[in-house]
Image (cartoon, rainbow, N blue to C red; front, top):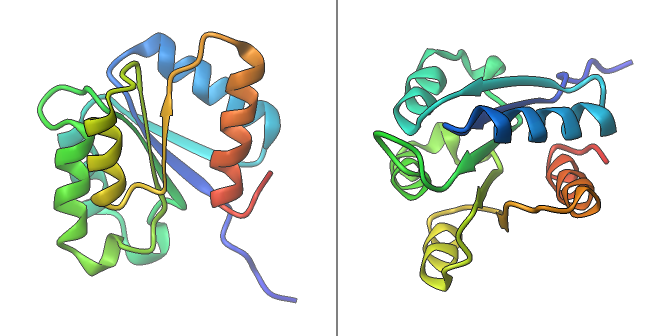
Length: 136
């Protein structure tokens, strides 16, 4: 029997309501997933730097517009360290600006979502996010 690492997700979003919404939706679909949250891009980098390799998140979910470092700046810095390359990265934002979307995808984001207003759409998004961790 092989021991699989329990999936864990690091969420970075400076809006507490958005954090609560996505965390609730993720846990509703996958109650065993571990969710950690931080408030800005600098905290993402600090958290990751403090993690041993076996403790790295299974996925990063980044709000595009955060204080200190936005998602694009975080993605740029993560690209420079091979340790972080295997971690799927998802960006979500209130903006559907094509230049933001394209830049994030070019910098290594696996997916880019516009924050939904509809609960069914949020469920669909969290299903796609969880599938990147091998869950759904």
